[in-house]
Image (cartoon, rainbow, N blue to C red; front, side):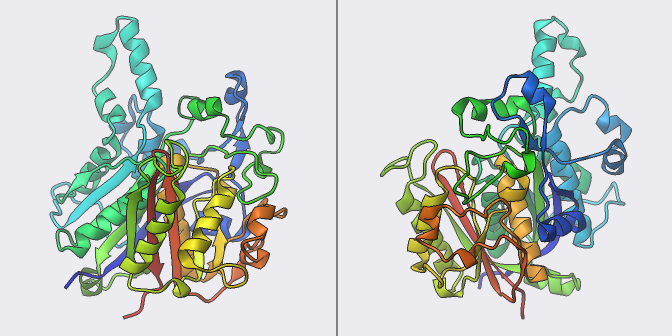
Length: 424
C-alpha cells in the first residue's frame, strides 16, 4: 500500500505578499506586485518592470543571525529560507533545539541559479586580486544547492536533502519528488519548494531574447497579461514558495491541520521533438503529462474543477489552453475555471511552480478562484476554445474539490500535479 500524502504547512515570499496571510489577501483582491525598477532603466533593459518581494532588515533578522547575514547577498536563498521556515512553523514544528536531528524529514528545494549577485561580487574580487578577502560563504551562497544547505541546517533535517533544477518547472517537480518519497515510505515528511533570485543579472538574458514585455514601463501593474489579446511578453518576478508534505498517518498521529491532499501527478519531457525546442513546448508531450497526472491521481478529467495554469503572457498562452482542452477533452462551458497567478506576480522563473502551488492550495482551502487581472480583453484564439466565464477577471467564491496545477519550462520539460480538498 502506498502512503497517502497531505500538505500540513505553507510558506510564501511573493512580489505581492510575504507570508500566507498577506499573499491570501492579495490573491483575493487581485493585487499586483509588479513595480518599476530604475536600475533596469539604467542598464538599458527594454522591460523595466518586475516583481520583487519586499523584505525589511527587521524581517531578515527574524530568520537569520547577524553572523549568517554578514556578507550575505543571495536573494533567492533569503526568500527560500523565509518561505521554508514559515512552512515548517505553520505545520506545527519549532526551531528551538540546536541538537535535534530529524531523520524522518527531508528537503527538496529547487533553484535555477543561486546567488548571482554574490557570484558577481566574487568574480570582481578575484579579478582584483582579493581572493583572500572573498569570505567563507561564497561557495555556500553560489552553489546550486545553497538554499537546501542553509535550510536543512536551520531545521536539522536528516532525510534526503537536495536541490532540483528544471527551469520554470522546478517548483512543481520538487513537490512531486517529495510526494513520491513519502508515498514510497522513504520519509514521513518532506519540505519542498523552490526559489529564484531577482535582478538584472538573472533577467538580462530574457530581455535579450525579447520574451519580456516592454510596453508597460509606465504602467507596471498592467504589464503582466496572461491570456489577454494585448499580452506582449512576460514580466520577470522572484521569490519562493514552500510546502510541508507529510504522510497522512503522521499528520493524523500528531493532530496536524491539513490543507489538502496530493493525489498524484506526472513529470515528463517533450525531448525537443515534434515542434518542441529549447524554448517551445512539444504539445503532444504537454497533453500526455496532463493526462498521466489525471490517471496517476485515480480521478477522471471531468472531476477537475479548477486549473492553475503556467500561462506566462507570451504567444504560447493560446497553445497551452488548446493543450488543456485536448488533454481533458473539455472545452466551451464544460471547461474548468482557469487562472494564472502570474497576472499578479509576474513570472517568478524557478520559483513560479512552488509559489503557484501555494496559491492553488490557498484557493482550494478557502474555496475561491483568484481573478485573472489584466485579462478583460481575452485572446480571440482562447475565446474560441473556452467560455470566457471560465476565465474570471474578478474573485469568485466557488465550492470545489479538485484543482490541477501545471508548469512547463525551458528545455521542453513539463510537470502537472493534482490537489484535492482533504477528507478521510
